[in-house]
Image (cartoon, rainbow, N blue to C red; front, side):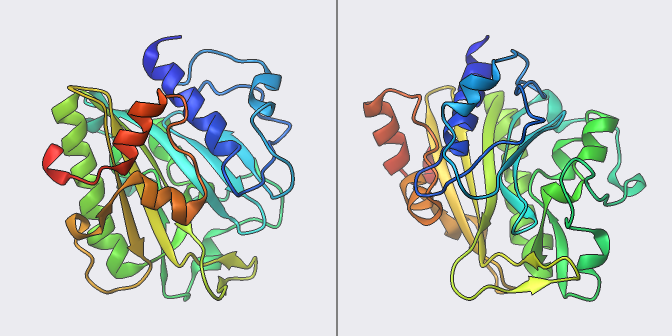
Amino acid sequence: MNKTSLFIFSLLLFLTGCKGQQTKTAETSPVLQAGLYKSPQPVDLLRQHVARGVSDIILERKGYVTSYNKQRKTPNWVAWTLTRQHTYGDIQRQSERFEEDTDVPTPRATYQDYYNSRYDRGHMCPAGDNKWDAEAMRQSFLMTNICPQNHGLNKEDWNNLEMQCRTWARRYGEVTIVCGPIFEGESRFIGRNKVQVPSGFFKVVYREKPQKKAIGFIFRNNGNRQPWREQACSVDDVEERTGFDFFPQLPDDTEDLIEAEELLRDW
């Protein structure tokens, strides 16, 4: 297993067994081997890091891995490594349609749940990161990669950060990205299948070169302008809001240092 694959696999293990959130894996998820997650691992290696209780189904895709919450009908998180090569490609999103994901049990999120809800079908792993492969592009439109997202946020500030992540991938060779919804305050639901509406969204970006750095972002799920630079925060801040532990496989002194930083000038 190369260093990148080892890093991602370790990251996924600890996100699945995150701080303050209980989870379990699907029986149909024996290994993490999608995209850069190519080295098969025993089922028990994954299960050792998984707590019990709340719904969690690990879904392996060509371009990303997601943890799906069957109660909320949204991802808990979506993780992928974006390489310089994967920021380019000829596959266009216009030919794709949002699809119900038959890999998860019913009731599950459908295209119709979002109809007339005033929320966009917001990608977590963006279509723009998957132009390198037709199947990767198609899978980015599965509803298990989608959250109810305010239209203004989806089309403006969230999209701007997605484009900035592609700039960073080209600049540094690759970046690792984890993003997902935040649920705080009163619960809201849309559609026949009761898809829960997030109160906000998080994104964490990590790079290995030229030195290890990480940065976090938190957005409110509303239409107010939230320029991505103004939403930057430390990874510690994201961990506090989400309960996830993002980089436990790093040496403690390195992890503590990069998680406490929020210096955009280093990017």
